[in-house]
Structure formats: C-alpha cells, structure tokens
Image (cartoon, rainbow, N blue to C red; front, side):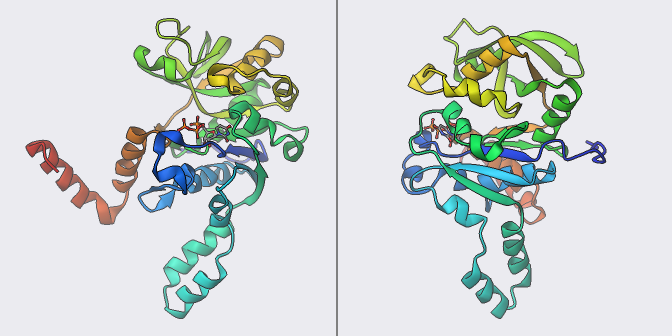
Length: 300
Ligand code: UTP
C-alpha cells in the first residue's frame, strides 16, 4: 500500500488516547498491569498507538490514565539507570531503541479519576485540547497499515470539515458489541451517517458497520459530552455524544484501510501477537512451521 503525500500535513496536532479503563476482560493480568501495557510480541500495545499518532504528524499525545496505571507514562519517559547499564554493557542497539521511545512524542498525562466511560475519558482532555480539532485513538485498538489509521481520518476531516469515525464491517451477530452506524455512501469509502447507536440489542442494529477506535472530532464535542447522560452499561458513551453531533453538525464515517486488532479482547490480542510476530524475520519461519504442525496434528 503506498503512503499518500505528506506535504500539507500534519492535519491535526493533538491526539487523545483513552487508556483509563479497568480492563476487566483481561483479568487477572490487568489486576496490576494496565492492559494497554501488555506486549504485542515485545512492545506494549500503547507504544503501537503512540507510534501511529506520531507517524500521522501528531505532536501532543494526551494520555488519559487512571489509578495504578502510572507505568504507561513511565514507558515514554527517560530510563536513566537502564540506559546507563545498556551503554556500559555495549548494548547500543537496545540503548537506541529505548532512547527513541522517550523521544517519540510530547506525552501529556491526564487522570480520569473514575472510569465513567469513554465519553467521559475524552471529556477529561478538554483543557489540554482547547479549541481545535483533535484525534482520538483508543489505547487498546491497533490498526496495522502503512497509511496510519488516524491520518486516513484526518484527511477526510480536512476534505469535508466534519467529524469522522472509523468504520469496519462486522458479521451481523457481532454488532451488539460495538457502536454501529448507518448512512449514505458518498464515495471514496466515506459515509454520511444518519444513525449511530451504542451496542444495539441483537437484531436491532441499523447496519453491520461497526465504529472502531479512531475518531477526528471538533472541539464542540466537549460541550455535548459535558451534559451527556450515562448510556449503555451505565457509562458516559462517546457514541451518544456523536449521535448528538450527527444531528446538530453532521457526522461522517470512513471505511479505513488496514488490519485492525482489538488488543483488549483475548482473541484479538492473540491474533495481534501472531500477526506482528510474522513480521519479524527472526520469528516468522519458526512460528509458521510451528503453526503448520499445530494445524496438522491439532496439538501444540
Ligand atoms: P474498553 O471498554 O475496551 O476498556 O474501552 P475497558 O473498560 O478497560 O475494558 P473491559 O471491558 O473492562 O475489559 C476502550 C478504551 O477506552 C479506555 C480503555 O482504557 C480502553 O483503552 N477507557 C474506557 C477509558 O479511558 N475510560 C473509561 O472510563 C472507559
């Protein structure tokens, strides 16, 4: 896949990364470790997210963190002692990799005192974002694409001047697990949304287009979220805020290009590990050979 020109970019300067959830689907691992810090091969999910934001030209990453999740911020800080040891032992490659992480982006950490929902997590970034359009990338949602997912959305935002959410087709029997949007296809993968609902009951989804963890939003969303009542699951849902935005200003969806992994879900996490391991020359052949043997025998 070719990467489009970057001459006019960055398209947005700030990106909010909600990562303050409890990660209950991943207990007991998430009792003391944030799910966003669980590794995909050897790299925390959150690092893939921040790297996506950076490769889209984003300067400030606003990390929404919660109690017991300080390791997320530490991961992007200098590791002075560790770096000194690596230097002293001549581990230059490892040293460079570690240093590069701390130089990736300007990480601004904002605490969500209670995990009241994704909409509330985004609202926590209000003062840091200010009055400009911004991106949102969920801290447990990976898109593997040469053209960063959030940059794809930012281009749609620039072209149409309307909020845009990432959409992905899912099997009908899975729609109840997502925000789901329906509308009119206006070309080039862009949908003008006329209905968006969070976790519709089975058999009631307006389409099979699920909203996944990438958004580019105008600052008006904050005023909407401020008065937003709790919705599905008793949480302040971003989708409900987007439904209001759709009615007042309009809302677009974009069928993004790339492979998406829900690293907050056990199966999605395992798939992400295999997919990213297969990109590593030192792992690929042995992993494929082992998987072929597992398929052949039905045994690990
Ligand atoms: P999820 O719903 O996947 O996260 O939210 P969760 O609530 O931690 O997961 P489970 O269902 O209990 O396993 C998507 C992203 O939004 C963040 C999460 O940390 C995750 O990265 N989030 C969710 C917040 O920052 N605050 C919240 O109140 C809820």
